[in-house]
Image (cartoon, rainbow, N blue to C red):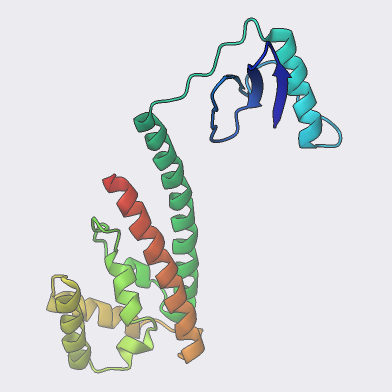
Length: 212
């Protein structure tokens, strides 16, 4: 919301609510009103126009004592913007991760608990990469123990993970002890793949922001 008042020839004074990015033109005096200042913007019918009138009146009444807004340095502004984006992506990542785990509970229960490796610097996680290849418990228990161990070793080599025969056995036993409520169909696979794709994209964005 913006409210305008002219003071002197060629000079424009603005009283602006603090709710986002600001652009300042030449010959403009800007005063930033934050939510902590004693101005009541509560109205029965919430409109920007009514808020603008209140902001204008407040600016006119207090314009002599209002501190002038000084733009932040570019570095500080970018840091704040990156932090806001990081917070947003973190929330989205948590939501997408919970969504994927919820899907896996019907296809490959506890698949997200098979590995405890921390995320890599690029944001990828071992359990997410694993379920991208073995998205249903039948993808594991449908093979013989030896066949799965060989396939798991090939997968580890492809993604740069350490292979362990004991770990392969643990995964095989765990998968064979689970039952997928969701049938192993192309549609079910598509749902899991899409959930993984969205999570990977968000995790990669978070990792990129961390490096900044």
